[in-house]
Image (cartoon, rainbow, N blue to C red; front, side):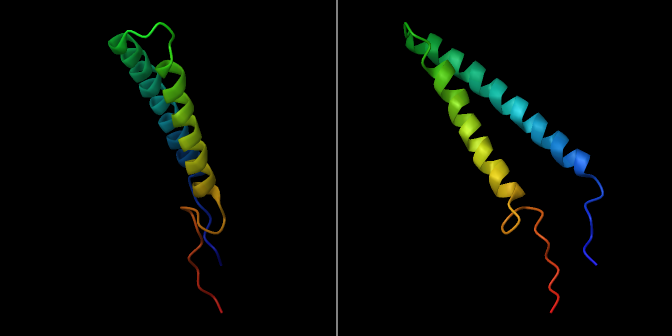
Length: 78
C-alpha cells in the first residue's frame, strides 16, 4: 500500500517561505544594482524578481510532477 505524506502542510509552508525569501532578495538585490550602476530607469528591480519567478515556477513544476517529482512513489510492485 502506498504511503501518504503525513505532513503536506510543511511542504507547502517551506515552498511559501522559499518564495517570499527569494523575491525579497531579488527585489533588494535589484534595487542595490540599480543604485550601484546609477541607472535612470529601474531595470534590475524588474528583471531579477522576474527571473526568480520563472525559476521558481520551473522548480514547482518539477517538484509536483508525478513522474519525476521529489515525492515520487518509489514503490516497485510487479
